[in-house]
Length: 402
Image 1 (cartoon, rainbow, N blue to C red):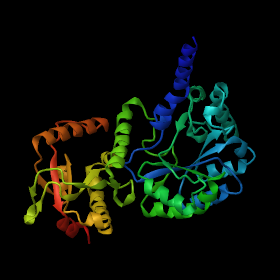
Image 2: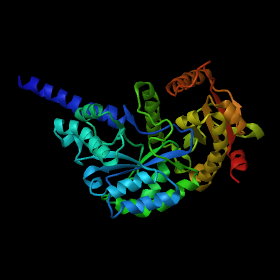
Image 3: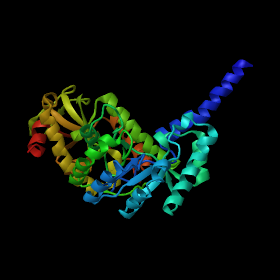
Image 4: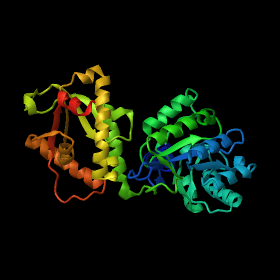
C-alpha cells in the first residue's frame, strides 16, 4: 500500500511539474519563444519593472535608438507608477503582465498558481484600459496549474531564446552585452530586466547593446510585431527538436559558430578528413585523416532567409570564417575547408570544387537531408544528392582571406 502511494505521488509530480517543464519550459510547446529568421529583427523584452529608479533610463535609451520593446510588468510595481506604464505605451512599447506575486510556480499552491495569470491579466487591463494577450510567469516557470490558469485567462505564454543573465551576481554590463550579442539571431526574443538585480547591469549596458545591434542591422520591435512569433505547436516541434540536436552535435563535436555568433550561415570545426584521398584542383592532395575544417549549415537561418539572401550572407560569413582560421594557429595548419551536404549548387557558386562521395555515405546523408527538409517544412520534390564541396586551405584563404 505504501509503495502504491509512492508511485501515485511520483506520477502526480511528473504530471504537475516534470511534464510541463520538459514540454513547455524546455521545448517551448505552446509558447512564443522566437519568430521567423527571414528579417533581421528581434524583440527585446524587460521583466520585473517598472521601477522609477531604473526604468526611465531604459526608456530613454530605447527612445534614443528608435527601438520598441515589450515590458512584462509586476503589478505591485506597475500600479503605484501608472505614469511609467503610460510612458511605455506612449513610446510605442508593449506592456504585458509578469506577476502579481513574483514567486516561482513550483512553490505556489496549485490554486494560487492557477489564479495568478487571471489576476495579473485583469489588473493590468484595468490599469492600461487595453486587452491582455501575452503573459510571462515569474522565472519563466510552469506547472500544470499555471497552464490551466493561462488557458482560463485567455493569455499566451511568452518565453525567450536569448537570456542576458543580467541578474547573475558574476555578470557585468560588459558581459551582458557580450552574451546577448553572441547569441542573438534574426527572430530572437531576448530577456533582460529593467528592475531588480538585473537592472544594475542592463541600465548601463543598454546604450552599447543597442548600438551594437544597430551596427549589425537589427530592427527592434515588440514581441507582437515580431514576424512569425506564434506559439509553438506540434507541427513546429520537429524544427525545434532538430535545432536542439544541432546544438548537441556542436557541443559533442567541438563545432563553433563562425565569428562566435549565432546569426551566421555557417558553423565550423576542425576534424580529420573522413573520406578517401582526394585530388583537388591545382594538384593539391587531400589525404584521408588529414586535418581539415568542416563547415555545417545554420539550417533554420538558411531555410527562413531563402537561397538568394543566404547566398549573399554566405559570402560575408566565409570571410568571417577566414578570420577565425587566421586567428587560430591550429585551424591555420588545416589542409582544406570542406562540407559534405546536399548544398552543392550554393557552395559551387561560392567557389567550392564539387567531388562525389562514396555511395553508402551519400545514401545516409541524402536520407538525413530529407529528414531536415521535412522538419523545416521545405518541399521535398526529390531526394537531394549529397556531394563533397571542398577548397584547399591555400585557395580558400586566397578567395576569402583578404
